[in-house]
Amino acid sequence: MNVGDLVRAMESIAPTRFAAAWDNVGLLVGDASAALSRVLLAIDCTPAVAAEACRSRCEAIVSYHPVLFDGQKTFLSGSVAYDLARAGVAVYSPHTALDVVQGGTNDVLADALEMTDRAPLRPTPAAPGQGFGRVGAVREAPLRACVESVKGSLGISRVLVAGALDRPVSRAAACAGSGGELLGEAIGSGAQLYVTGELRHHDALRAIASGITVVCTLHSASERRVLGRLERLLVERLSGVTVACSAADREPFSVV
Image 1 (cartoon, rainbow, N blue to C red):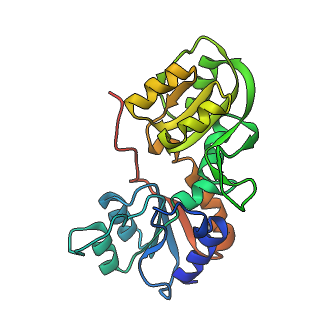
Image 2 (image 1 turned 90 degrees about the horizontal axis):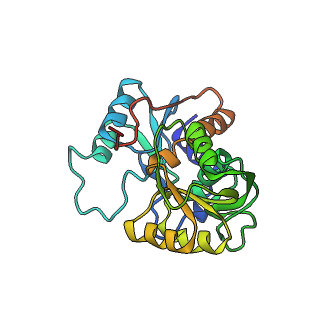
């Protein structure tokens, strides 16, 4: 196996053609012809994750968020991308390509809501059933109980809530990561609840005024659960390659 096999496996799981136009996805660091025996999965390719990959002798990291995003005019020692390239560790980032596909980041978040009859909030043209965000039916229950269920499914103890908690919910929307761009679609979908990672202050006010309750889990908490599914999919596709989720990768915010 080589890094190119990892690229092909990721392309089969989350084709890069489905990524947002502004995104930077695919093999961002490394050599596709390099040998591959160990892969580390993370949401963010932080210095701690990079150090873990080197200690574990991983030849590649799959980092959900791109390790290189904006245009770079320098490539110097001390940057994560430079140091990994020098160490011979490749980095692949799927980001919004993984959000869009069926079974990807947004479906995993929708699973936490036990959402059925789901559809994308913003469908991808020419790709039926795929797109950004999800909306669908949920088992009718008090909204507060639904929030507690989401917390349990995501393994978190606290969330931020904007809007009423004392009413029933039977339809919900979800968007992993930053959900402001899809707030209009969530409001227009008839959902009583919108679960996302984070939302700007004025978007929260807009949601309250529109009568939809927003639950913010923190950004990466809404995405992290997809890593377990990605691990299983890669193990199926990369015979003989060890695939593991990072122990050093974590949400940068903590609740105190």
